[in-house]
Structures are given as structure tokens and as C-alpha cells.
Image 1: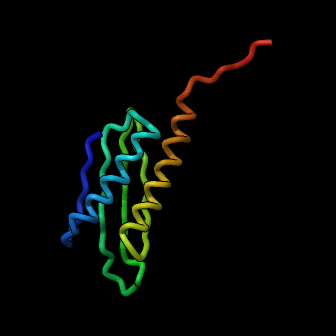
Image 2: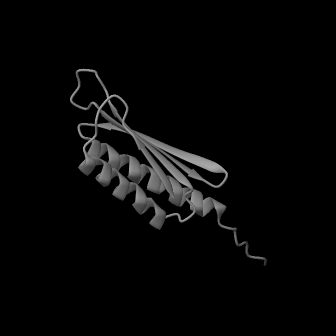
Length: 104
């Protein structure tokens, strides 16, 4: 899986980037055909303590999935978005499996 992590308008700590990378790579255990993942860390300038935004777009064959979370920390936002993508991948994986109809 090709992984791109961008963080425009601020400098992210290497520990944060490693955390994000580790979380996203775990998605491969739920769906092995992930082609690419694009993550974006955004620092919202509003006066709100929940000003950390994490966006994740995952590209799989013939489809893309997306999740966005806003929380007080990038780690929390990452956890929630990755969990949302995990659920989407499992749901998608279930839909693409061939259906087995019983013939009576």
C-alpha cells in the first residue's frame, strides 16, 4: 500500500507521523487489496479545543472510501477515522464476496 501523509500549514512531529502510519497500515489486515491511502492532518484555526482534523481516503480497486474526524488531539481523531474506515472496508468486503444462494 502506498501511503501519503500531508500536514499543510504546520510541522508535524515524527512521533505523530509514525503513529498515523502504524494505524493506517493496520487497515491492511482487514482488507488486503488497499492500493493507496492519503491522510491529511489539519490544524483548524478556530478557537475551539477540538481543532485537530484528520482526513483519510483509502483507494481500493474500483472504489475509494473516506473518513474525517475532528477531535482535541490528532491521535484521537486518527483512531476514530481509522475505525470508521475499518468498518467501511469490512462492509465493502462483505458486499464484494460472491453470494451463495441455496437452490431448493
